[in-house]
Amino acid sequence: MNYAWNWAVLFQSPYLEWLGQGIAMTLAVSTAAWIIALGLGTLIGIIHSSTSGPVRFVTGSYINLFRNVPLLLQMFLWFFVVPELLPKAAGTWLKRDLPYPEVVTAIVALGLFTASRVAVQVAAGIAAVPRGQSMAARASGLSTAQAYRFVLLPQAFRIVVPPLTSEFLTIFKNSSIALTIGVYELTAQTQQIQSFTYQGFEAFTAATVVYMTIALTVTTLMTIIERRIAIPGPTARG
Image (cartoon, rainbow, N blue to C red; front, side, top):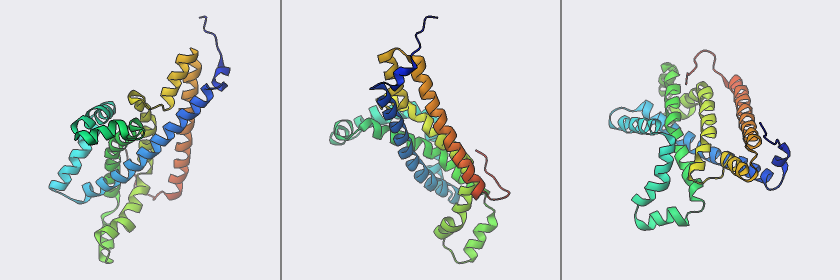
């Protein structure tokens, strides 16, 4: 093997800057998508666990649709197909006038995809809260909204911290799919470094180390938080 090792290239300009930009974009896309996923997923999980009939059918359809369609296909649909289905002015705005349309599309696609998974975890967490807690909240004069806000959701989120941590790490890793629609996140920047320097081993090793470092850091922090807020007894399994 006549491969010429050159780790120093990673610290040269502009390759070091490209790595930094890729890390920043990955974190930005992942965080923004997670905010959407957590907010929307919590809302859908609450509705799905507290209603029946047509409304539950709608939330169940959303969950099944977004969970069972591959993320890559969803990203392509949002980026290439949806603008063509909208009125011409709206489609043109999405494709040309919207700042960073590929980044916005990646955030929306990741957020909606992961929201379906978060909804399942939240619904499971609510179901794991003893039924007596809900009855006690009602007996105390709390409305349904107040019962969820002050009694059920705080306990449910404590139960589902481990699976929600897993979902965040999944959204973090899935952000690499955004390169397929032109987002220069970490994997895309790594490919660019490889194409300019022909030092693919070094570039992808660096990216691997970054992904592992961030994932292990998040896992460690969430493990500490989980131990501090854990409710003895029930747990939710993702």
